[in-house]
Structure formats: structure tokens, C-alpha cells
Amino acid sequence: MLSERENRRLHEIEVQLRLTDPRLVRRFSSLNAAVRAPARHGGRLLAGFAQDRRTVHGSGPFPTMLLGIALVVLLLGAVLVSVPVVVAGILVAGLALAVAATAGPQAHPGTA
Image 1: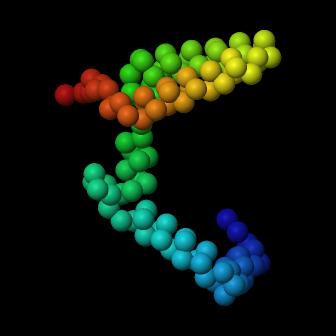
Image 2: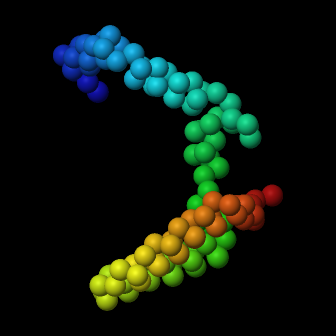
């Protein structure tokens, strides 16, 4: 909860931004419109993402295992102070995230 003085100051800042940077105002307007516009797969663009958010764990055991291996390799590379091992860990982590992003969500049993 903002005080009256803080509200006035915030309003002054908003008015000043509208006058001095119309490009920024257009960006925020387009972002606001994108959030409110329906997405191709139903729902809202960002609201649907919050509901249907993909996770590494939700994509199955393989990406989760890859990410775990990547973290162990990164830790090993840090302990050994070996740049190639750290780079390999980063690549495996990227592979795990790519697999998780492309794999469909796994079906979970629900209530009838």
C-alpha cells in the first residue's frame, strides 16, 4: 500500500515517461496486449504458460537424469579446476533443458 505522496510521485514518473519515451510506452502497451490476447493453443499467452508450464521433472525421468549428471560434471569440473569438464557439464545441462523443452508433458494419474 502506497501513501498518497508516493502515489503522486509514481504518477509524476509515469507522466514524465510517457512524454519523454513513447517507444517504451508502446513496448509496455504491446506486452499488456499480448498478456490479454488469447494464445494459439487456447488460454492466454502468459497466463496459459503459468498453468501449462513445462518443467524438467514434468518431461519425464530422462531430462531429470541428464540435468543431474550435468550438475555432477559441473561440480567435478569446478573441483578439478578443469575448463573442458565444466564446458562439458554446461553442454549436458543445455541438452537436458532442450530435451525437456521438446518432450511432451508426461501423463499423470488424476482423480476420477
